[in-house]
Amino acid sequence: MVSKISEGVTVSVETFYQPDYSNPANSEFMFAYRITIENNNSFPVKLLRRHWNIFDATGNLREVEGEGVIGVQPVINPGTKYQYISGCNLKTEMGKMYGTYQMENLNNKKQFKVIIPAFEMTVPFKLN
Image (cartoon, rainbow, N blue to C red; front, side):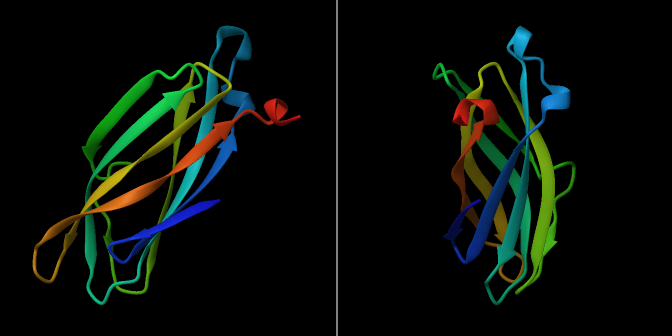
């Protein structure tokens, strides 16, 4: 697991290879990731948008940007956590992702960016 604190928000990421949804013979590798967002601030925050940079082992970059996460824009109260699971497909056995969340302080309506730390996705047999 990797974690990063920025703007009073901790983002932690765990990754999981999904062999049942992968087809290595066709260069299709599926990964799931669990993100935990913890609000360490004294004010509630709302996650408005996400921006991802996704790299495969050949250095190809894919960018994904959009509203919220998994179809919602969660409000995270002070001292609480929000967790979700999503996925990413790669054409190589290894890759990495990182990005940012655009958030809003619900007390003063100011927006700010929270860093999503870089995390690696690696097929387990590559680690042997």
